[in-house]
Image (cartoon, rainbow, N blue to C red; front, side, top):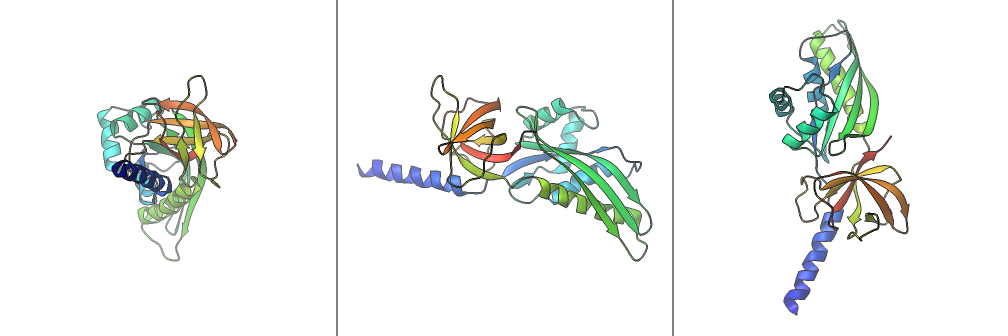
Amino acid sequence: MFPRRLAILVAVWLLAAALSADPSISLAIVPCGNLSLYHGHLLERRAAAALAAEASAPWAPVDPALVARTLEDMAAPSPPGTGEIQALCSRLPAALALHGTLKTAQVDATSARVTLTVELLEPLSGESVGKATVEGRVQSRDPLPRDQLLDQALTRAARAAMQSLGAVHVVGQVAPPVAGKPLTVLLTPGVWAPVKSVLLLLPAAADRQARPVAAAAIESVGGGAAVLRLLGRRDAPAGGEIAVWVGRLP
């Protein structure tokens, strides 16, 4: 009897720890497209590197050099399309992908300005779960090398882009599936999880960087639970998965 009771206590403790722990979401940051009039100097990769440098926890960015190398091995176009990004995330692997486009890149001897549009992509479904357009500006009293000014502007734009993405957080646990009824997640009291929220469903017993079992969108909320619609999956959710908020559908 005691071993069984101990096992139950350990299971409860592990579940509480899983629900309270901050998730670590692996993020593939794709080299940016470039629609600006400034070309060369590996600007697309420098923008991706700036985004990776500004991606703090819970984001766990994949090494940008590995991302670029994998895309080259795939012979993917530049910039890659949704299908190529999905394949990239499967190869790395990565739970989400961030890709962007440089709309503006202007620089002179004392100033620089960049405008960057970013989009967060859920690769199981190919759905966009977050978008933002941000700007980075820098002004210097004295003339500086143009690449130095441009890098400073990219850093400011990248910081604003990462801050624009919503705060990733655990919202609850997937309830055991019932035949003929929609999948639901039991919400943690007081958690923010509105309709159209996109959730990654992570294995409860795995580490914080586990690959998602599935991605789902919240269709309705009530009675301490949310009804889910699966967007894409690797395996059918069995119940007990940790549901992590990562963004919203348009």
